[in-house]
Length: 192
Image (cartoon, rainbow, N blue to C red; front, side):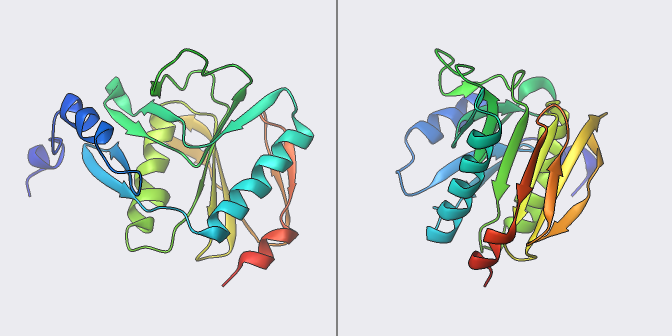
């Protein structure tokens, strides 16, 4: 594959959006780095971890909401579409914004990895790059395979400058503009 063909998207953005609208409820489609991505339906542990994060955010930052699966326009030139497991933003941010919203007011996105073969490229790499390129201040990756939380912050020139990882059980400080502290002891209950 040549460098020029690697940058060519698999399909036009309009074609992706039409395909995504017609997708069955059993799959979630995303368009990251010019490629169609199929996000698996979450299992029970995935849902419990997402709920744990939602409760932590609500308790510490009641002025914010953690919106599940909100479609975001990401990447340079706004050519990408992602549905993070959670988008932390001021309450009311997405009112009237439609299916794919500008992430300008999103303070943090969160992803909980799935146990599938695409997790490495999708959650650990492609989405990280897309969220950084969109200027989202914090990307929180809850990695169920590695039993870690990685806090990506300080987006600069399409990448995150900071990326400390913490083991389940540690207290994780999420920096400004979020400014919360996550007690991750409960995540040990979902380690396989």
